[in-house]
Length: 510
Image: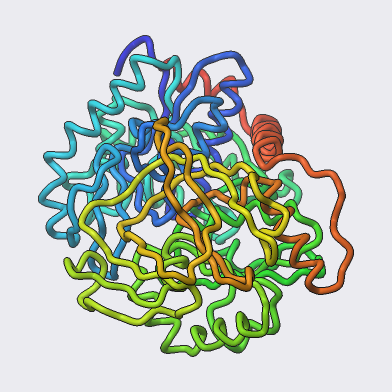
């Protein structure tokens, strides 16, 4: 470990204990205290990814932590990203670029080679920042995965980092989780654990204190604090399932996002929580879809397989009927591709199926290529006289693209969005198209709804079509909202844990 860099690793007794969110909280607290700090996770497994300003792909958990730290996300913060393509295989992203598609056995053989990649990335951050907050994955007590580990205690060894162990009390059995985890660790790794945090507590902490004292006697490690169940609106990989089960808002415009089996970049729709005139929910079958005003087909890691899913449950036919009634449909990335006439995968990039008919709502055909497009883009809305984009001509949009499909457009495709900047280079690329009626369009741009003017314009055009008054209330930008939530997260966690002890751990003084 670089002696000039202060570091701690946040590990958990299990998955979904809150490692990502607590790491983000530490990043924000340290930033507030006037230090430079960066997040790091050697290996992330997620379908929710992000494109940096350099055009590199990384996991969004470290993007959130970088935003909390007040710095630009960099692929050094997440040098390895695993994106599952099926139950047995994942696309391996190394230093922001596609390396290969592999199953577990193939990837396990690759790990020794990747250890150097991980070490180089960490050292680069350690050289630049005063503090580094490392996040583990799952549990360090998965003893079947200890050999060749590069994401839990193996990563702590690489960085020579102390560890804080997190237990989730909401699951029940947190004392046994903590004591059992420590018991299963090798002695050299048990010594790295310098403190324990109990997370997701509901109720009066005084009731818990007798148990905390007994736990400290048993494990010989201090409990640094008890963090309450956090009701903050911050992207968290661990709370994905909870997000999908929630209904957002109570407005009179009903928005449905189709919950695809391989749904990716669900964070595209977090901003909908700021629009008080809508209700948004995730739906995966016909029984729950109801009679929405807007259907969104989101991004997916496997467009063809998820299109087959839509067809198998009849959602494709429902979406067609919905559009034929003049109601709104938007496709994003893979969802955009599904709206095409046909999809072709000659290289078997995504599936064993080479050709399949699309939903057919946009006059477009898609061919999957070997190379992945990963770009940050600026664009603008093109002229639209009717439909969802009416009166939005010239509206500026920003976001990023992650896709392996290339679109070709037919005569009836109506241009909707033009890209004018791609990774800092001036371009003129037709990105999004729709139908002639203006109630269906798609785009490759992730994060497009974060552009508040566009989202409010789309919702108001849907309101007009329903005969409702438009919403003219003031809104803050999504960026302003996120920053306020990071501050709120930091305040809650700072008040719940012994930050002096945490600093001492990071500085190697405990």
